[in-house]
Image (cartoon, rainbow, N blue to C red):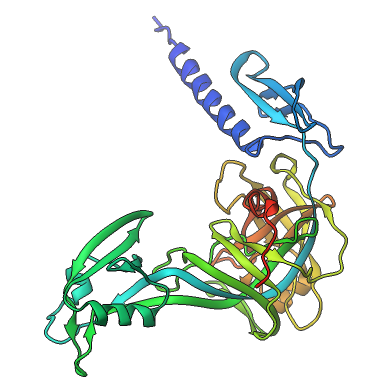
Amino acid sequence: MKKAVNILPAALSFIIIMMFAASAYIDGVIESGCYIDKDGEIAAISAAGITAEFKETALLPDGRSEYKANVKLFGILPVKTVTAVKEQRPYLVPCGTPFGIKLLTDGVIVTDFGIVGGSGDISPAGKAGLQAGDIITRINGEQVTSAKQLSRLVEKNGENTIIEYIRDGEKHTVSATPEKDADGVLKLGVWVRDSAAGIGTMTYYDSENGVFAGLGHAVCDVDTGEVLPLRKGEIVPAVITEVKKSSDGSPGELCGNLLSNTVTGTIDKNTERGLFGHSGLCPVSEEAMPMAYAEEIHTGKAYIITTVNDQPAKRYEIEIESVDPYNRENKNLVISITDRELLEATGGIVQGMSGSPIIQDGMIAGAVTHVFVNEPTKGYGIFAQSMYEETKELRSVQPQAA
């Protein structure tokens, strides 16, 4: 006699999982509080069994319209109620041009330790509990802005050195006892970094607000991998002088020079989604194009705009192989370089190409962020919408003259 199988628990589990997934998807779609179709209108959402039809519910004091929608799974099961505000779709100038990066850190970042005087196998900083990646912000209450100033403050305060630092976003305070080096100078026995410089690719320029976006990922310390805490930064023109081609297991690199005497903008944010700031100069003469929202991007043909020599930026064909709307960082897209000219010149994606805008269906869809080290013809990309959301406060603040 066959035994009956109760499939109800499994079905309920599946439905619950789908409802959580639907909720997460909707949160990602309207993260910034708006959902607009290609015609600039609030639109219905229909994807993977999720349905939501927006209806106008209120007129806001600033003249914008508020919409609400009941999100349902399979058109039956209610998931949540969401609110959206109709806003104008951003139009941005795609760049793909190299720019020089000069950063000064907010505090100094610990990179390594050294033995000082009679400190034994552990440096005074190590004995106090400091670790690589910690950000030293103050010594005895005085703000630390450079490696030289750190040395001066340690010498000034002697054995009574109180260190304030940040680790994993949390503030800490420890007491350290410096030791004298061979020259009789008090030292903590710590190596620190207070600045960084390099070359990246600008993604877009927002002419209406004088705001730029680039890289698609943070500038991190080369030794610790930690995001460099930004005190202030500048962008300067840069030229590409050489391309080191990528190969399996060895990512290539765009090499170039910074024209450091000509500052063209300020860097105001260094985040996991890129570098952002103000500039009064758009580096290209291209026309602005609409920004694609995350839900409009799909697998298929696209192209990137990038610069791989001393000539102006060019368009190269790519394939968007997958789209991940749930990723909150900078790996929303998997792309593959298909353009023979670019493959011949670079071997695929190379370091320095991060930030190259991805264009699909006549809209800025995203930016290149990472290369697959063992398969350099492929890499990750971030949504342009995610980068644009990082500039919200910058768009409401005009840059100050130096």
